[in-house]
Length: 208
Image (cartoon, rainbow, N blue to C red; front, side, top):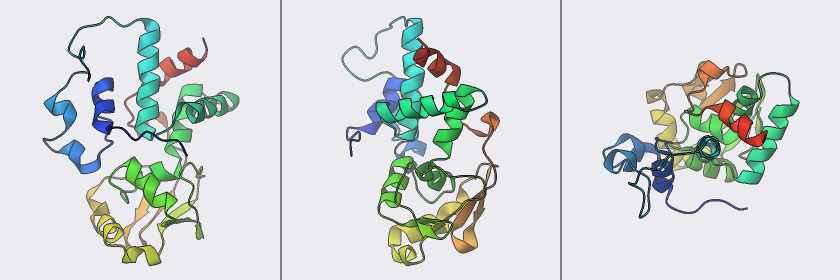
């Protein structure tokens, strides 16, 4: 399975915003954006005027990197959003938010989406009582995500479950700390998605 294996702090610097790809490090004074708030590379500190296409591309890359999705899969999400009823950009973000790895992260059972993806791939979570190891699995309204009972023997997962309450949960999700689980109450609205992207720019990019 293809995936990005380079330094993720470089991605935040390239986009100029925190994408929260490194978990706790992003909240500390070690954050690359706080220390070097300019693009990486030899010409990172130079000023370059962006074209309209360049701005649209940056918004797409920002969304793609936030959710850890490669280009081909991201385009599939866009095509699916374009087929559905509603505002295409908003539907696109709703599809990305309802990925299993993202919901695990939102519930606080992983420090980053990358960690959530790894934990899901290793089979540590169930959906409606059945083990699911596909990070891109699309959750629906009413689905219940839970940490497998056997997985709670893992020191890392035990730590994550114990500290989950310190993280806020979006209004469209409900976390039950007693059972190390969470439920999808409804499809999120745009106001409930805090991803810092202008989704209309992405739609314009793919509509070219």
